[in-house]
Length: 283
Image (cartoon, rainbow, N blue to C red; front, top):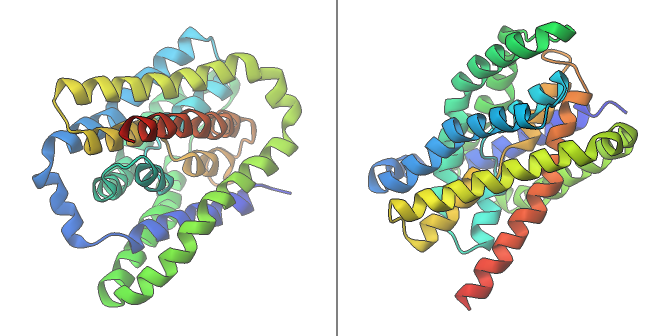
């Protein structure tokens, strides 16, 4: 089974569901809560790629895994972060706005960063990036579903709420199904590299979340917003990274998706632990 035919629909559904929860007034959140928004967005767009770049060199990852690690670092947000923010008692409206804005911004930043990484790292092993195809795939599978979701929410809000109620329940299990299928197909390669690569992606999650928590305290961001910032910076869009790695129109490389698969597993462990700690403290 080619996992690309699982991941592409899942990514499209996740982005469509994000659009269903968005209202135009949500974007005023940027003006109303600038500190939390700027700290989180800077963490997602700037800090994460820098941390991944350093970790990739520190752990001496081979080029295909190095590029895969950078892919996950350059793919912020995802609608799952909104669910985790709700579980942690965070600011869900802020989470939704951050997810939407970071997804739009990475339509520009991701191709630029990944082209640089691919040229500097992947050329020695024959890995290339068709930037035009990446842009087309992101526009078709990420931007278009969000815009359709926003339009439905604008003109048929009751229908949007009903659809979201269903999709929000099946999207995350579908992503876990993808991880399970991919894991079953590539378990030999995963187990052969799980020590170094697993430690690397876990370090990425912990450093990202830790830096987000520290920055939130430095800028005196309140409890609910701070929890949202930590989750948004610590939780990447694994579906997008897997889609770009395995897509026959972009990298067409199954091994490149392994960092995102391991990231998905460890991300849930780390952030569910964080949610449990937060809930215990607020009781």
